Amino acid sequence: MSYQSDFIENLKYYRNQKGFSQAKLAEACNCQPGTIGCIECGRQFPSFDLLFKISDVLDINPADLFLRNASNCVSDARRIMQEDFITYVDKFVKENF
Image 1 (spheres, helix red, strand yellow):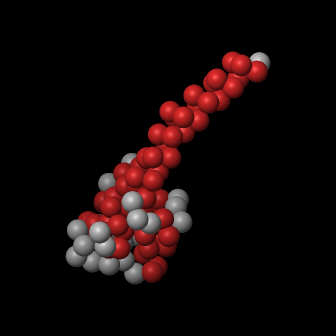
Image 2: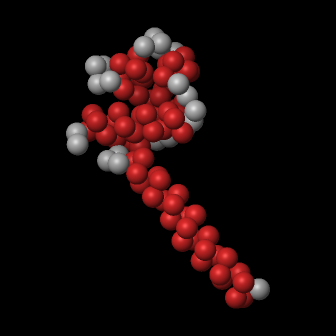
Image 3: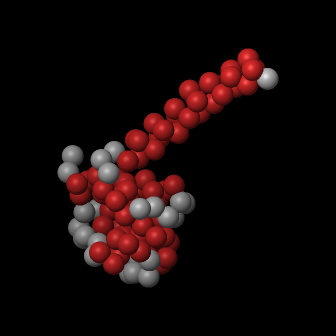
């Protein structure tokens, strides 16, 4: 997997997490309606300015868009919190309080 494909997958993941369509994200970033679609298809690369706008709108660190398998990491962390940590806390509370 390449950095570009990681970036594209992460952009799609975080955009969907915020409930944005491509057009809505483009509007929030003050860019052309098709720009986000072109980026997500790999036909266009964002400028640094657009990269920072996207990360601001999505409320993430710009580096998050380049992490390998960020969407899997977030999903795994969420699953661990729900399955393991909450179970542990429930058990701890029942045993100690």
